[in-house]
Length: 99
Image (tube, rainbow, N blue to C red; front, top):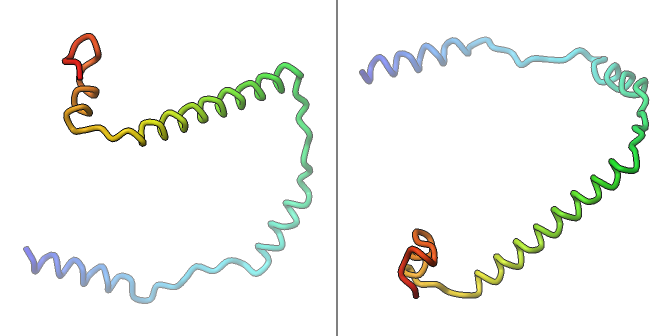
């Protein structure tokens, strides 16, 4: 088992002999730069409804993020015991024992 594994490793290492690093043509960068200069940026017109919708989505995400940060920081201040965390995780207030 170990011998076949070592042989496989040796065969793999021998197959890498004579390998050369790939090289790009000397003018590849220049051609890429020329192509990027030819492409012109275009302005996309958006209706007022689309702009307001995007703005509303951003506001909703920011407010949700703020609430989550505040809630998370509030929970971090209260140290809970293992028993309390177990009860809160597996039982709702109506199903489980009250603390």
